[in-house]
Amino acid sequence: MFTVTKEDIALILKDFGIFSDIITFSELQRYHYEKNNPASQEVRLIIKANLNNGQSVVVRFKNEWDTTLKVINDQSRFAKFLSDNGIKTPALFMANHEYARWYTINKYDVIVTVEEFVTGEIHIVSKEIAEKTGRLLAQMHNIAEAGKFHVQNGVIFNPLNENDLFSFQDFQVQKDFLLSVDESLYKDIVKEYDSLYQKIGVFENEPRYAVQGDISNCNLYQTADGEVGVFDFNRCGDNVLYYDAIMQAIFEARLMDYPKEIDGKQESVILPAFLRGYHRERPFTDKQKDVFPYLYAMISAFWLGSIRFDEDSLCHAIEAGDTKSVHKWMEEIHRRTVFRPEMTL
Image 1 (cartoon, helix red, strand yellow):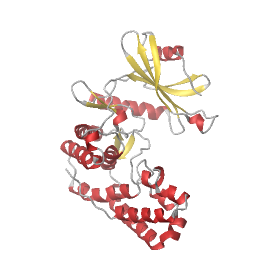
Image 2 (spheres, rainbow, N blue to C red):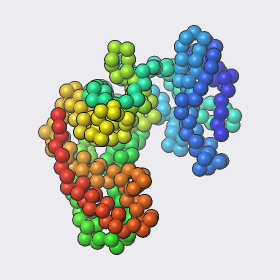
Image 3 (tube, rainbow, N blue to C red):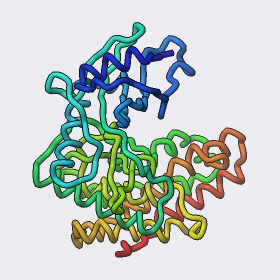
Image 4 (tube, rainbow, N blue to C red):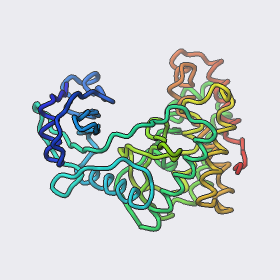
């Protein structure tokens, strides 16, 4: 397992122009790649180091199959570009005029970045926070578009590709079982999917610009004056800005932690608040409003939790051979494909 010592961190910080002594350090996040592969050399580790000058910094160590030094430097440059244009992001440190560099530590090769540690991390998404987050995302989109900023990297919120919200492919791979349960219903679902895909694909050839790519409660913080800032550009890449806006909105409305008073109705509160905040900074066009019901239906129908991850998901029912539950899921998925909610602003 990849480990670092205080001495390792101190040497890194000196390269990044930080000469204060380290008092303590702790792990903020670690991906345990070796659980599935004891021989894995992949690393994602985030360390917080507290310095004797009262400052704290975040040191990120990374080596993943899809990671390059160029991508991480480009992601960092985008964060700096946003900061230079008024977006709250942690200050970044440089070594030899770059934001990232390779190190070999305990026989692991890792890319390292160093940034300011910020307080005020947001853990609960309220209606107010959702609206501020939508506004923040729109401002970021405006800045990226105006500056024609690009980061050549894959994103997790492109509905035309594999993504982190929904998967028709996970549904389709169960074709044989689903056909045996209700052939007609399966074909109707596939037909509706094809129709939805055609509707949302109208923006496929729109210009793509850099996006932070993963706005969520764990990547947001609130400043003393109430502004919302963002950190962690690990998922930063180029995307159609409309796709990023809608998928981020639904992501925030479904997968965060929320105040108890909106428990059970969070999507009806958070989603319109997010979209309203976005719209005030970057108004949705009529065409974008028209496409929203179809994109929402696509995401909802093939929601990864429902299809694969939830304890009572479709795939779990199939694994258990529970044809009754599978048929109920097929009926629910079909219902979702034809549900067309309007964009509420």
